[in-house]
Length: 294
Ligand code: PAF
Image (cartoon, rainbow, N blue to C red; front, side, top):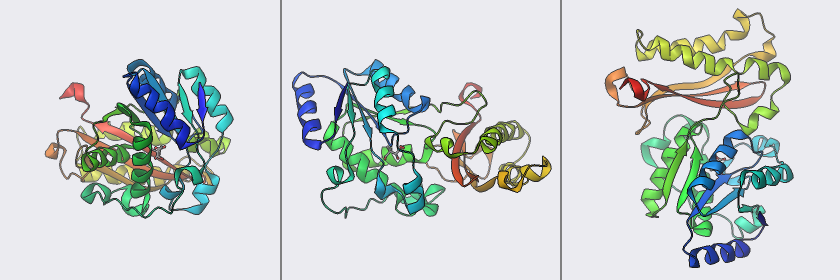
């Protein structure tokens, strides 16, 4: 595997691949890689001639300086994992290399950014779009791979592709979970041992919400999820430090991302949640009315 640190070297490698008419799979990441990322890399490996994985903690998508400072950085281990997973190129630029000039571009996405993460993380999706477009320009991928845990981000990238009209196939990939159900995330490594043990109750609660959706209305299921998680530590006699603080739980149309009021309001329905636990912000997604039942 080739570890590339400069945009010039990446451009040279991509130009050569293009001359040879090779397909290119791009997996954008912020490093601290886990099985979730590696599942994207393996899928890209299976579907493309050349696999490029970027490892770049993108400062302009963090609206919270502390979160940026605390974001785990494990570049050496990441490169080892990428090499084992069959990547051809690990693109590991510095901030100066990615942004030689101050970034002035701002992207707008309309209603899909006005819900869930959007209002709570001002500037986040524009920052994601800026870096993803830069990566698209540099890697010129045939296909780009993103994990469905960041469900709203996928809708944003789909919209970005419509805005910039690049002929790139967006490949959303399923969430990978630990054996106990916790969605894999680079942020999980910041949880204390005790918090890590409690964290799978987010997914357990979402699974119960899907069962409840058979006989309860949308609003009741939403309230139940928020209440169940907020009171979890108390009901289970746990320490205050293991309190779940749900920021939102929205049940939305999986295409427009707008909240639904009735289960029949959309063909595809997902529940998206953001929860604080032990000073770490965790997100997860669950599908209601799973496809096989449709
Ligand atoms: O999902 C992420 O890890 C990031 O938002 C991405 C897409 C790599 C852009 O920095």
